[in-house]
Image (cartoon, rainbow, N blue to C red; front, side, top):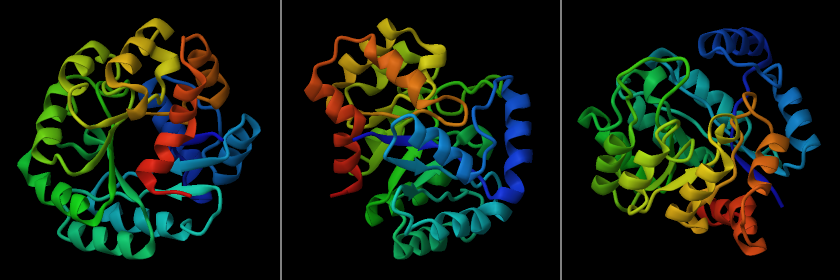
Length: 264
């Protein structure tokens, strides 16, 4: 079984514009047109059985619309939708309760697009409530190709959050820190956070990827692509270059996701 823990799609009416603007901002190609149908075509066509679909509330005014979309997908057999909340929204705590009641299993934070540092205390009530509700928090980790410094979710800042909220379910994307992998090892490997492999096949060597996986342990690594910016085929080929045992691969490909999300 293969679970993609990190993918993106948009409402059909928004998909073309979203993909075009994001691709131009980061100077990277897209492998889908951003619609749910095309995302399914690529992911299922390349071996993914189930995928976590991440949404981002880039501003307080978009929060409810983003979460309406996530909630609308809760009963899709092949999708695990995540919602999103913004720390500047006066309705963020209520939105977390609404997501939980609807059966959503997690939320996505992207501190660059949401424009706040991950260890800014204004977000702490949201992290605390997510922990209380058992919602998985998935954070963009490290640099983002579309943004310059300072990095708002550096491994060092992420470590402060991990230590403050030790009971929370935290996933840090992009090997714990995109293009900051060594710092991720030093700052986060000793914590309890999970990491995912999203976009790593495009910006980290298999040797570096395996070093990160060994530091965190296969029990805390989740397969993810960052589709539409990468594909399952590329990520699987990247992982195939590593000396991972069948048991380790099973954990990374689906076992850890099933445990974290409490799936059958």
